Length: 352
Ligand SMILES: Cc1cc2nc3c(=O)[nH]c(=O)nc-3n(C[C@H](O)[C@H](O)[C@H](O)COP(=O)(O)O)c2cc1C
Image 1 (cartoon, rainbow, N blue to C red):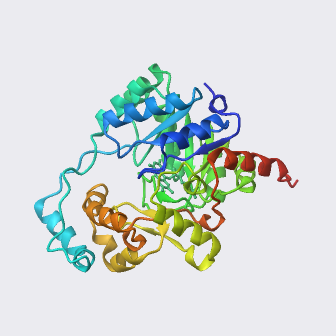
Image 2: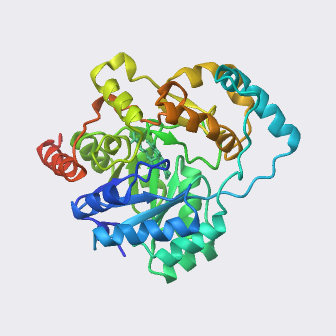
Image 3: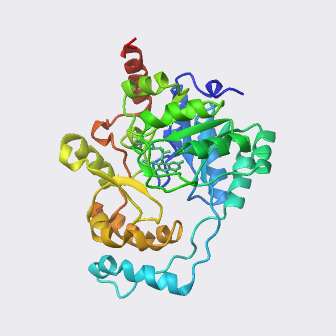
């Protein structure tokens, strides 16, 4: 199968873990002729199958399911105690005596992959690591098109060699977590450089992601040789996006007040570099962010802090993932956004 068989318009709504990619959002995007993606990294195997069924009740069009490729960590008691101390200024400011420990570090990846294969989406995309030949062969046997995320040439080549059908080139501008698994996560390459590098390095289609907010960005990505553009932040303010109302309000504030649209890469929330709006949590943790345990341990340890912040609508302690283009965010139904993006691509002249 060709990547272009899965959409009428070369636009992929990025998978976004943490609640944004509701079944209504994924289905609305696919119904509008683009490709919707369900972020399943934080979902249990049962929830993955339930969400896929919900999407299927809303659309007959192709959609994607996305997972983080990760192993179950086994941190020592000392590591956890140290990490909890690093977070002390935050939890103490909430008046807590100690940091509540999570029930588990992450979902079991193998079980999630089985659920994904059972759910049989047309497309599956992966980040944070690589599948092996056997896993990709199983996805292909289930007729599932496989997209691997790469942030540099070595990763793109590795995915192609393992049998991936397309590569998502994630540029430094991108909101959310960096998918890097070879080399340093903060050696981030911008998409203007990354897309042509990957287009030249692999023979499978390349999808451009990072900082694309409108039709001009999509046209630019296609001009660089990408077969599609993957947009995340642009969909966060859509009516169907499931993010917290206060987070959505912060994103829209970033659009009206440019000085509030500063993003940075931080590993303080999760132990993996991710791009989001700067807030008090990030500032408080700046000096120790290099010492926090790797994903998913830190992510699980900050879970109670982020839940507390969400319950009180306090955006200073939530993770406000957003890409560098956040100031260009627009609030509207997803179908309308796709329509606008398509019209903008058509209006963008190609300069020879
Ligand atoms: C809130 C948020 C959550 C994200 N979660 C995921 C995820 O679960 N899986 C994934 O592959 N990428 C995830 N990403 C990264 C996107 O796939 C994509 O690289 C990014 O959104 C593109 O940059 P943009 O946000 O500037 O459009 C996330 C991005 C955001 C903004």
